[in-house]
Amino acid sequence: MPAKIPFVYQFDFEYGAVQQVSPLVRRVIAKNPSAFTFRGTGTYIIGSGREIAIIDPGPLMDDHVDAIKRAVDGEQVTHLLITHTHMDHSPAAAPLKEYFGAKTYGYGPHGQGKREQGVQVEEGGDMAFEPDVRVSHGDILRGDGWTIECVYTPGHTSNHICFALKEEKALFTGDHVMGWSTSIISPPDGDMTAYMESLKLLLDRDDEVYWPTHGTCIRDVKTFVQAFIDHRLDRERQIIDCLSQGYTNIVDMVPVMYTEVDQKMYGAAARSVLAAMVRLIDIGAIQCDSETPSLDSNYTLL
Image (cartoon, rainbow, N blue to C red):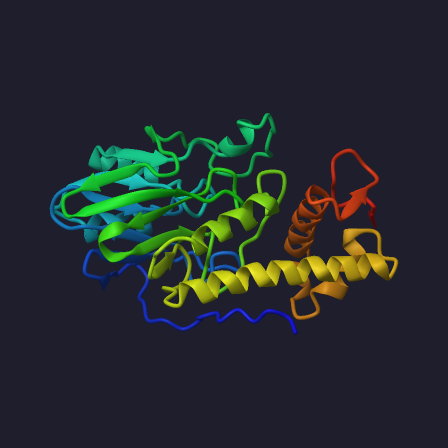
């Protein structure tokens, strides 16, 4: 039986309004709903009064930037924390940095995790973003009444990093774990092998609640993460089954594997299958007829 992920689709919110979601956390949701952002980008505000941190400022939309400014009017913003550099997460950091005089924090510019491996990633993220402070796994950031631990979680992107609010045992998961959908893993910047390891990393932590950038909170975190892992393993088994039946290319596999998905999403699904193919090559289960696996390659079982 395929793994069932306990997605949560319903939650109350109002675009542009500031909502207190926990004692230390407020949220403002941008009006940028889509098939990839769900209801929109949720920007989180940590603390109050002095030394406030903002997580994932969001897209470069004037109304959203203005809503964040209103939400913290009269307060002191000192930290702008970026989970990763997709266009719905980091671009608003630039005007907010200028307005508040705050520093930006992130793992690195777009593709940083792959650049370290000598891999050149495609443009398509926020190529203008360069954090003022580069953070790594285990780094600690502090403000008035809050403590943030940086948790490096490559996979969705190579520079993806989560932020754990120690006082509430809360993890801000960006797009690594979302409550409404699985994450898109698109090579070369997306890496399924790294993503699976990053999911396993979360199973060893003591976080009690996740706050994704899209959608609402996740409470039963261990069950949720294990379901994500099981789902990806199910997809790998589907690929093996397709290869056993004589399918050799991704385009032909997608309709067989994604019967429950709208055909408009087949392009994204194909990218996800490619990511799974790369992982299956990494673990020695399959082989590819080209040096670099691609959507046009042919694959066979080993």
